[in-house]
Image (cartoon, rainbow over all chains, first blue to last red; front, side, top):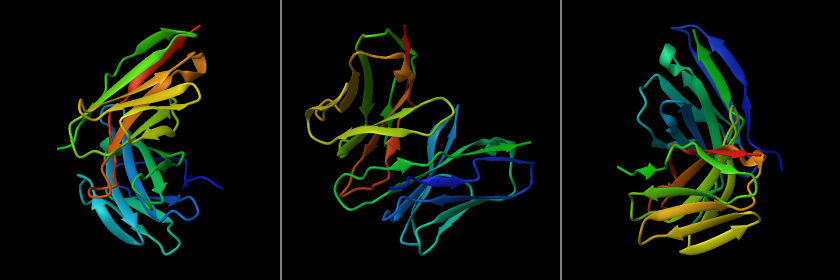
Amino acid sequence: KAGVTQTPRYLIKTRGQQVTLSCSPISGHRSVSWYQQTPGQGLQFLFEYFSETQRNKGNFPGRFSGRQFSNSRSEMNVSTLELGDSALYLCASSLQAGDVDEQFFGPGTRLTVL
Amino acid sequence: QKEVEQNSGPLSVPEGAIASLNCTYSDQGSQSFFWYRQYSGKSPELIMFIYSNGDKEDGRFTAQLNKASQYVSLLIRDSQPSDSATYLCAVQNPPGGSYIPTFGRGTSLIVHP
């Protein structure tokens, strides 16, 4: 079974631009979560989508948004990029079919904002 | 606010020794506990999870859970240089609570030859 895939793997943008990242979950997984990871803040939760609906949201400004399609693929968008948005953006998918829900991470997208 | 605490390290152990990584959590309702390994520049990789008090073994890895003390640990036996990585602890509390795990900041492990 294929793992979680993310595209692109690397991105370089300048301040003020916007960016869209894509995530394809493991087949059969309906939940997709997005995280931002920086050396200073660790792994921070952005939002989670389940069956095309945003179910949970972390403490990030409205510049960060996302969506999920009917095939469970998800995208996240960051508008008006700031230098502080430079980070590794991770997508994780899970089944959410029982009491224990294992999240599996994709390889991440390394975003650099200049 | 749910908190998951880990010593940032680095924890340095010689090859062949037992590495002991610890994690404490604040939410008494937490039910499931996960350990991830993250190599530098890579994404987290799930090692194992535990949800019952006691020990759970998987190869060279043993997870230990003590809900009364709100404490979970990961033991790595016969540590190898390839185990050098950051280990993230994550805590989750379904089915009554959210499936979204809370992550600790990780402990850096260095296994030296």
